[in-house]
Image (tube, rainbow, N blue to C red; front, top):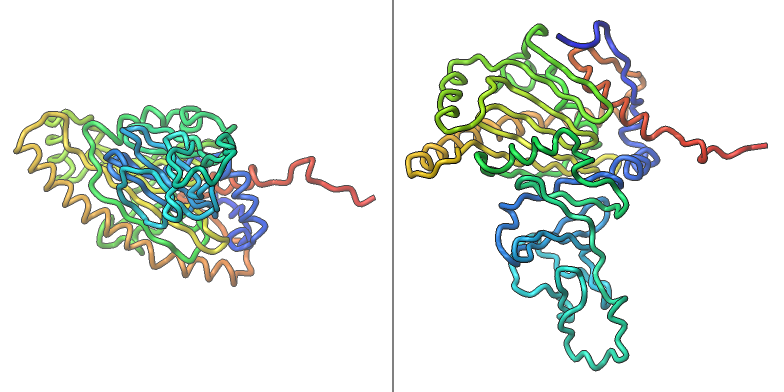
Length: 372
């Protein structure tokens, strides 16, 4: 059953989806102090593997140092060039593409070509900017704020969930990344309600579940949705998962950890998504799919796990692609709207998310300036 019994206000005005002032407030209040899922161990599997990306206007570089993942500002301490513009790769040396300055895992300078030119050398000042980096299961998180809370405190009850659900019996099977011409909240809010399912997901989900089969929890840090999974295919897969030693719940769940990370789960898969704002009207979306493989080795298990992963990947990809066309139209509507909007009880997780945004972006007492 839903928690609310009557329709709800659409708390965010349309301008909050394209205002530069609101965008900057959200970066400061929601994203700067938060931890951000940026990659998985499968993407940085070997010593010397690296990834580069842009995060809120900052160029970042993630690199594997013999199993330890570190994050840096992708800017050389010498003359400010990007260390590399390559999206991903592997290099035994951690060095700048421009003049060959090399660095260690702490960001300190190592070998410098023709180092005598720089005497006396201020080694303490010549280092890369580093960012707090932690892993949970196979997930790699980075925070841009050195003074932020620990990842464990940030994830709260989801820390143990991430450690167990994205490692061990589950293996990464697919990644997807795209950029959309819409505010980041458009993508998040779409994922928080099932009301759109009959219109956008006719070929996959078909229809939304009846209210009596829905369960919601709403808090100021996270929300979740659960409904039973009762299909014949689900019963077969549950039996298979039990033989593989994978916990069985026979339910579909969707979790949202504020501000921008969601998990969709069934017994056979974990679908993880993050949405990063780029501008007031654009965002970047990344998806990771993990599928069950079990804990016991064996050729038959590996082959059946591979076949299951391929099947689930096709289904997950179809769901993601079904949503994408609506985002730009929602954004165009928001920018033209003269109304306030309304939410139904099936959309109460959207209401909780909008309240979270409003509460954290409201003016603080020290920001009011007297006009006397």
